[in-house]
Image (cartoon, rainbow, N blue to C red):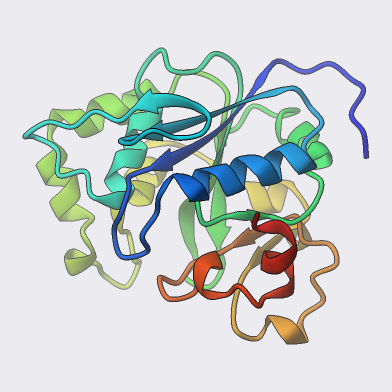
Length: 230
């Protein structure tokens, strides 16, 4: 599908805090950028918030003594004021784009809601995929008033049965939102598992890797990873 219409410039965004359990580095940014470029004909700006050099436009992550900022907490810097002009589509670095995104982008940019991915397994709002258009700097400002409070309240050690953990909990609590995988057809989004060989993934556009031990880097034999994560 080749897009021929007119939309505001789309910002496609990711965040790299190098290292961690998974071992994220600039090569993950390159793979995501490559897959977006192959699958999105709509004009867009690809940018990464990062603490290291990356092979695309970079916005430096900022850290201070007030911020622990391990992993997911760095994502709250997405909402610093003035970073983006126009709509923003965010993907986690361990997302694999496996199909054309034009129709998805046209669908989400036609409405005004803040969108999060719904994790049906845990019944939570996930920040694996986000979409917004407008000023949501209140998220960043409120978090920055007391980072230690939010990082403690939503730490994995303090989780309850509702699994309100990390940046996605802060975003979900502070922001009325809808779910991108309900605005768009559910079959466009797939949470990867070891049972994928039993599933028809012919309509999947976005692969989501939820588990720390199941990432593109550890599932290189997955047919869609083999085809698209490069």
